[in-house]
Length: 220
Image 1: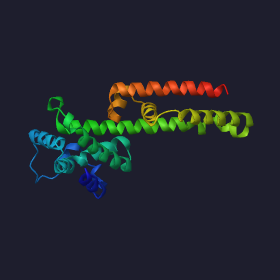
Image 2: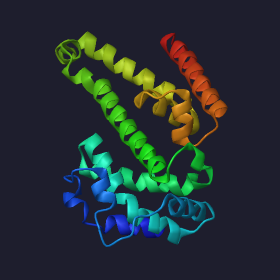
Image 3: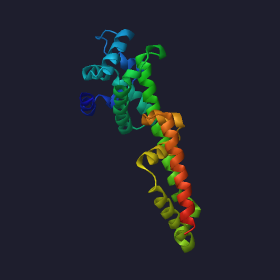
Image 4: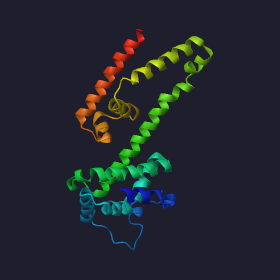
């Protein structure tokens, strides 16, 4: 995995690739190269599943441009696309053993992961904007001119900070992933690489603790 990260950080080829006409143009941009057969793609993934870093590097070299291009088109942010491209190939490294040729082509499998990563990031950023939109809310903004409203707002913030302290790191991670990224239980389980039952338990347990703690704190 180290070789892929190093290559990605040192690569300046992304500067103009998002302007290419199609993803296929990128995948086979070098006409001197022989088209890769699906059997060869599958062999690469199987080698990666066996722990072969050279196979991962080879797969990265042949597909990172289309991954980057897809992500940058979805997120409209080159820095985010570079970060998520690395994340995608880290996922490939971790999940190669789970790849089943019957479910689709290798490139399709990689691109689905890239699309999922990009959409997750968009949802996360949009949710953060909504959570922080209180700054533009006339009611909240007027709190700075109304001592009672300012006091109430500060008290609610204090209660929430206190309540979050009762969560385990795992519960907090699961809850933040679900609510800030607007994901289903199954999507959270996939994103965190955790069993679905474990994710459900952590979210339900965490929410129960928050309700109980907030109720207790309000009564103080």
